[in-house]
Amino acid sequence: MSLQLVWFRSDLRTHDNRALAAAAAKGPVIGVFLPSAAQWQAHGHGAGKIDFWARGVSALQEALRGLNIPLLQRDINAFEHAPDTLLALAREYGAQTLHFNQEYPLNERRRDDAVLAAFAGAGIAAHGHHDAVAFAPGELLTGKGDYYGVFTPFAKAWHRRISAERLALDDAPPAQAPLGIQADASGEKALENTPEPHRWPAGEDAAADQLARFLRFRGRYYNAQRDFPAVSGTSELSPYLALGMISHRQCLQAVMSENNGQLAEGDAGLGTWVNELVWREFYQHVAAGFPRVCRHQPFKDSTRALEWRDDEAGFTAWCEGRTGYPLVDAAMRQLVTTGWMHNRLRMVAAMFLAKHLLIDWRRGEAFFMRHLIDGEFGANNGGWQWAASTGTDAAPYFRIFNPTTQSTRFDPDTAFIARWVPELAPLTPKARHAPPAAERSLLGYPQPIVEHKAARQRALDAFKALP
Ligand SMILES: Cc1cc2nc3c(=O)[nH]c(=O)nc-3n(C[C@H](O)[C@H](O)[C@H](O)COP(=O)(O)OP(=O)(O)OC[C@H]3O[C@@H](n4cnc5c(N)ncnc54)[C@H](O)[C@@H]3O)c2cc1C
Image (cartoon, rainbow, N blue to C red; front, top):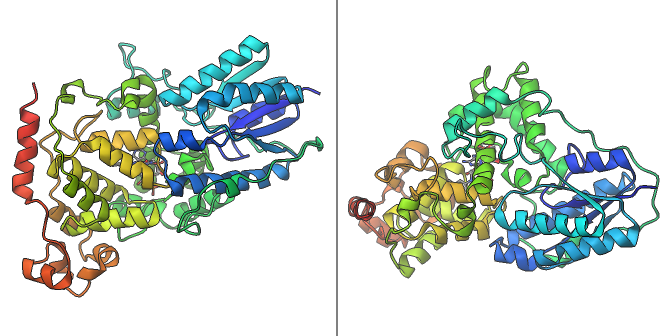
């Protein structure tokens, strides 16, 4: 009996899981999950994401139970203990091969390299599969053989080379004969709880339902509605994609079945949505190809010398949703309360911190990571560096959103503001975009902590001063 170990990480599903499918094709499988609380904290993940992770592991365990695959859990606390722990398990159960799906940020790659080296040293096979993206980092390169640092040519290359084979789905493996190995208790107990667990039911069934609902009711309107935070116009699949409770292939296959077999062509709403999945992949390639971004460095070297301001009061006001800019405040309160923020607002809130307050984007990146249930290194870092004009495809430094104009364009009837900044609800919808000073005082809402024009100029000056 050639036992196969499958190490689950951020790929918490039994369907269309490359490592699991490859392992099950070779022999009976034992699953492993290694809770790594100290490491997750060092990576800045907060209670909401860790709780979602734990609930996802429980759901995975249930799904694996139906296949007679036991899921073992060994608390390793930090990545450095992964090689010894996995080797010990492989020896204990006489496993022939270890399988896992690769993760691309630097610390994860180092961890996986150490595991591969330890297994090679012990003479046990170990295999890292490419699963999270259609093209493994390094497969799509510019004509000069470099990683893409700009999205549009990356996306063109992606569309040129995507094929049915790359998007082929792996079935969940058939149930195996019981191994007589007891699964470990669910990780749920070991990890923290979040205030709103019911908003995001965990697991691959919940993810599949969410995808089906999106494609049935919203997919075709995606282009028209995706920028309006008061409307539920986007898929809200990010937490599931971040922890692999659904795969990008499952998403893309579902789009093709709705869209006459097409991805980019055909329905404009669905085509635009596909493009967002390509953005997700792009930022994973950036994390792998430009490891400096994993070391808290800007992608654009020229912005390294930028003089960010020390402004604790400003940072606290931003975190607490008390900047006096209603759309920014509504966004930050949505984040802190629900663990999720609408994409348009992530751009507005991030740009406000990095440009209006001229506070180091890395502080904002860390704050988002601590609160986002979908916190994912590539997308978060990429989004922040875009907003701060330090990254790939970055907004040019002189492009600075006016938060009030963003509010009138994207929350025209201020329904979103009224929901998250209830102290402004008594005002007329129009007045809520930028309430008059006297009304603010009456309603207990702060005056703007910076004046848009002056703050904009200060940011422009700081960027112009770069060598
Ligand atoms: C400052 C900032 C921080 C961000 N941090 C994260 C993060 O930690 N995790 C995260 O998943 N996304 C992040 N994003 C990207 C984006 O805001 C979210 O993916 C999106 O809002 C999730 O909502 P949705 O699932 O309804 O997206 P949809 O619009 O339905 O898009 C479908 C999927 O495509 C991917 N996606 C969409 N937009 C982007 C993008 N700009 N970059 C990368 N992937 C994208 C996500 O996986 C998303 O679930 C960030 C964006 C910014 C500007």
